[in-house]
Image 1: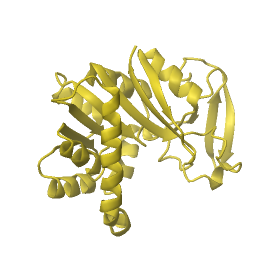
Image 2: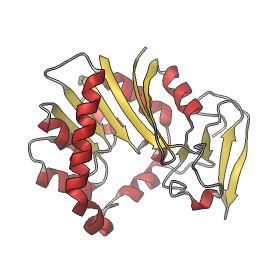
Image 3: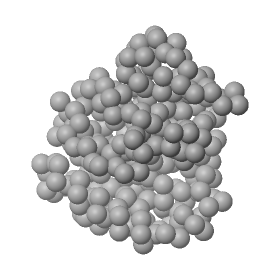
Image 4: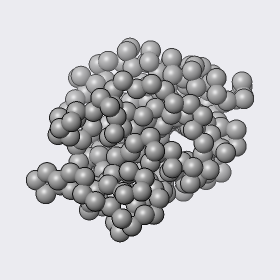
Length: 245
């Protein structure tokens, strides 16, 4: 990549190098990425049955995950004007917990997930929802007319190769008065270990893109999305809500 995806700056320096893995940092906005980036096909292979080997530990925590999802779903409703017929989309829906929580709140809920094992789990356990197996681009190609009031995207954007296309599609799927909830690791967080290799969010090539508050805000502004709420994150991460400017 010859320039920063966030601000188009062509000046960047090495941020970290480990066993041939190189992270570079944009001199302008502080956006950090794996250089070179992997190809999309390799990224998707990492997700294939990603949770199959940890199903006993991950999918066994259903009650805890559902309770958290219900709290988040209720919280997000405070930031939209609609009270009825709310359309909810979870990008990277995993086992479908957040989608089901939104449905229980009365929303029309849809989940997008590329991992077939997670999709199978979600379809078997939460049969009243819509789950799409594939990435956001594939979903949009078949559902470009759809509009959502709440788009939920947690711990996804760090895995991507083309962040601009991803945010552009979110904007197209977002209703004019809708909101998008985003979370991602924060590489500049004050609680991040000084030794990058001791940080659990440092896992290239699984995580390709690394944001801080400045670079994420700049990215969203480029697509006319304004951050209206920042949540405190004691774990090194960013949690924000954004809407149309």
